[in-house]
Amino acid sequence: MVSFQVTSDQTVEALITVQRPDPSVRAVCTLVAQAVTYDTVGQLPVELAPGTAELEQHRVVVRTFKRATTVTVQSCRKAP
Image (cartoon, rainbow, N blue to C red; front, top):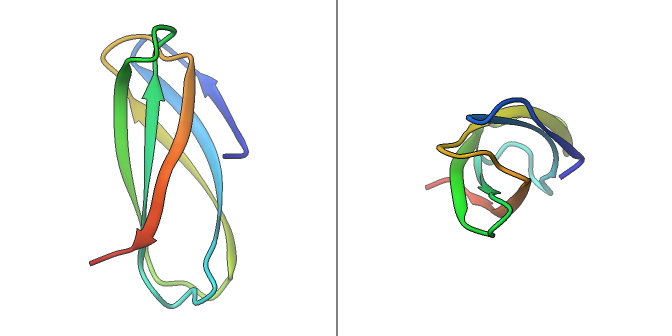
């Protein structure tokens, strides 16, 4: 996670950097947004297409059902 910004009660914009040793392999990273009470208020699987760069930045919008206070990358793995 590079940065995030709460843009409304229903959205959070996040900038993530992903490093893949083999950029030709598809990947999925899951982002989780949490409220001040630590409840999960949004979740987004981000599918990363095969590429050529080992290090990539992606800007994504996570939709939430309640105002979030933080966003984290829960996991990144090879896509099935």
